[in-house]
Image (cartoon, rainbow, N blue to C red; front, side):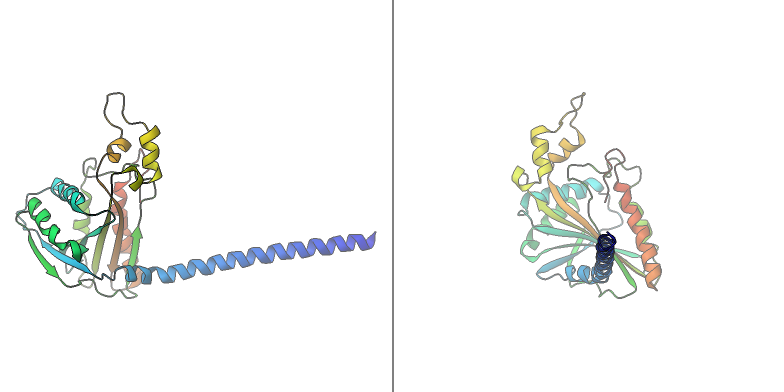
Length: 270
């Protein structure tokens, strides 16, 4: 009997040791993976910023410009109609020495269609093709990349529903950067077609089973959004300061401004 008890105790001890060792190993490997991902994060974004076969348009808008958000909305809508599926563009803004600059970056093969669409909405704009303006990022630069958390049918706040303009708040912050600071914002958009097989499963499910109209016959937010020309989007931000800590703090302040797109009713956010 004693030998059986001893054997059982040895087996239990072995299993316990094996389980604990395995858990430690798994946790350790996961921690190493997270550290590796963090170390690779900036270099991955830097790699994504290498823009081969791209044309960079530097856009100068006069101070007397009276065009509002609707002009950019119309520009993107018209551009959607002429872009091929999965073609991407980037709307960009930089701040250096308290000067804001605006850019549009597109594949070189479609550069000929950008200027006419832009002048149609901003006739007083000055458009210039320039070389790459982004500098290499060093240890004093903090970078982030944002994605939408939820389905593309989930509505989010736009200038139609915001009490304060997000672009105005971002511009106000970027215009106050210190002399040694630089900030960059990229809004990357990829054209998505209107066919059900070009959208995702949530769109297909909505077309079949989703609620489309409210009691007053107004379309639901999801149905309205499903009927629009859409882009797949993400946002990249970078902030360079006198040291890494300052850069990270100021970048997170900038990130907070993008949370104004969160729709409290539908919990849509980045």
